[in-house]
Image 1 (cartoon, helix red, strand yellow):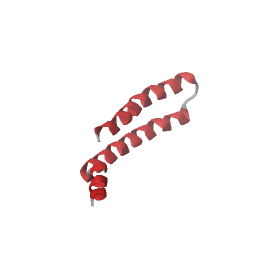
Image 2 (cartoon, one colour):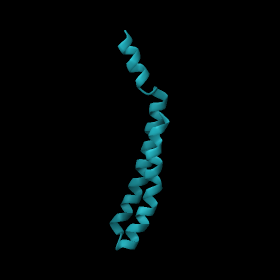
Image 3 (cartoon, rainbow, N blue to C red):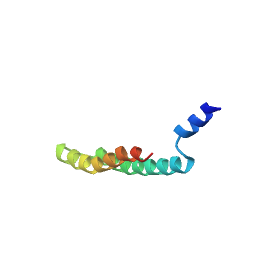
Image 4 (cartoon, rainbow, N blue to C red):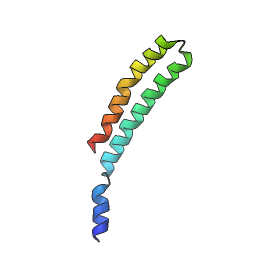
Length: 68
């Protein structure tokens, strides 16, 4: 049936899917450790430092989805 072929074409391949899933899990783990620094943040300067650490992780995560 042509619908089955279309669905298989649109879905990511299993290898690609699990690779992307692992990459996103790594980024979630990295960002969660940075977010934990917010617990001890005492002022705008410290929050800015946490933001500076978090921004590259966010940018990488935004770009990950483009590899499909």
